Amino acid sequence: MSNDTFFERVYDIVRQIPYGKVTSYGAIAKALGTARSARMVGWAMNASHGLEDVPAHRVVNRNGLLTGKLHFDGTNLMQQLLESEGIIVTNNQIVDLEKYFWQPEVRTE
Image 1 (cartoon, rainbow, N blue to C red):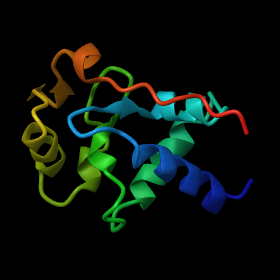
Image 2 (cartoon, rainbow, N blue to C red):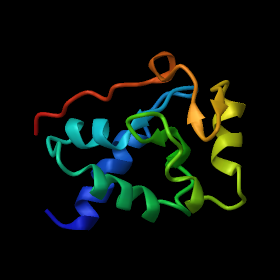
Image 3 (cartoon, one colour):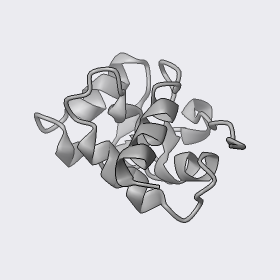
């Protein structure tokens, strides 16, 4: 599978993350049937900037850390976008991650 195809599959899942929810790089990788590819999901998210229909701010690491925040314009844009959806963030980490976590469905393709 080419990177372009993998990235598009990642974006398809990210587009499904509900407003006010987040998911992790690893959860997306697992849903794609490639559980060991969380880092590739991160690369896909980094490449997604400029795609207005991909809510990249809703993807965090497994501990709820805003590890992708450096890839957003402005120092706190990722946090501001999450907080505008009602998600509480303290010290670059989502408070009560379980409350806001969305588990994508595992795809069987």
